[in-house]
Image (cartoon, rainbow, N blue to C red; front, side, top):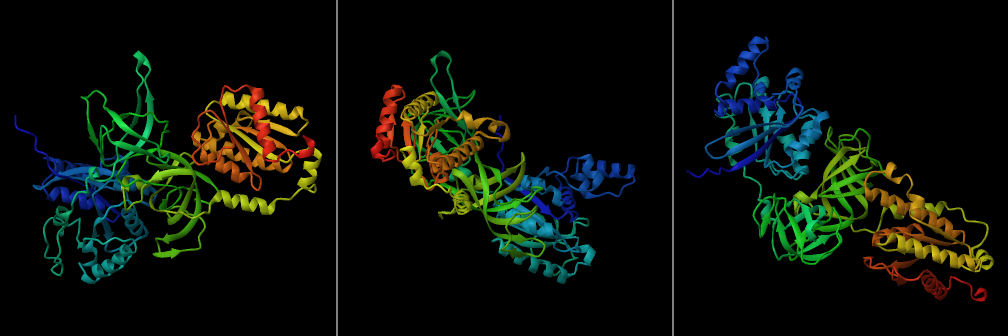
Length: 602
């Protein structure tokens, strides 16, 4: 049996303002390149005559009934054609402003783009937005088609004016088009063959230009990136495997390779590669969806980004600069919490700063705007409460793309430009403004301490064993209360009620829980109380947040059992099995050393 020929493939997206003729150009290209199924052209022509409608080449493409009825492309219509050189997948992306979200879907993984501009109407707002979106999505091979030249009498001056203006826009977006082609999709001018209608044009035809486009660099050549989508644990027949599952975005990995998970920084080695219903593999690469078992079992969470040690690592930060296109019905505003999706990570995110907004209608930059309105293109700083792992668009593009969700709908899409390393944060701004507005009690802290016999302090118990944390925290509360100290213990369940219903993801619930505890700690310690919090499963960033919200007071950290708290300073480590009275005595001794208790009162 003869082996199947593997031909080169190229994905091509066609974009442009509504009614500028994208579908007509593609239909003409299909018809004149000889790639339509036999009888298809005649079938559409007969249908048009039966319905008393003039034939349009766009009808070869717009297969959906509601699209033909309205005369606009709603979804990204896919079609295929081939030349002696290779196969093409062409996506006719919608041009109407209401369907820009669909256009982004169509262009997200294309190798090259064609931007269609009506010679008679000229450059429109969406023409400019589409240029930006092509740039934002990383498409670097671009040709601009100045269509409907027949409506302007094939006037060279009209063509040159559009080329000059649109080339200036693309330079602002760091795009250099490979060509500007004057054509008429309706008449077939310069689509496949050169035409005497444009003797002044000496560049390539549309088909010639398409044939020069190159497929994108294979993702296997980039550093290894594997967003962790889930961790599966099997228990039947003493199967102790923990399988890390996901899809490889870029690069390749082999059994025995050392890997690092970000943002946690945990390391291990690939023990086995698990592929469903397939022979054992020792090497897998981009595009595959394997599972991995690890030599050293490490506790990692869904959303981490696995990379190979020795290769360029991803970035890890809470703040980053992004180019963002906003599609939400409501504007993106500062102070509101949205949901960020980047790789497999899901995180709350806030708009921290708007650097500037591109006004597509005037091709001008607005630097004073403090919100991102619908259809705005903005360069802005986004901030997450905890570090997330990602790449910048100039390094590893697939893991630099992000989506913003507002009220369960995709409202924004963008790319990460660079990490923002400054010390500012929306949380620090909140604390600063809160402290400025804070109205201090008329009773001085020293007077409270003299009366209570102790200073105010927040004591935090954390560990993986929630029951042990609560048991030891309650024992400390009883011990201090027996000394007639002003003390109060607050468990997680006391502030968890309603959070699951009010919020979406577990990370959002956790962040809101920590925020509430931090604000309560600020009030309770300011009132001179010893405020005890049991916060099971806290990580370093939870504790940093709690500490910041409790300012200007400090917290005392009690760690119960084994718990990865990073670089956060732990005041005391306790075994989960420690007797309650013994644990309370050890914490009291610690508080005495920290001079929380007044000497004469002991």
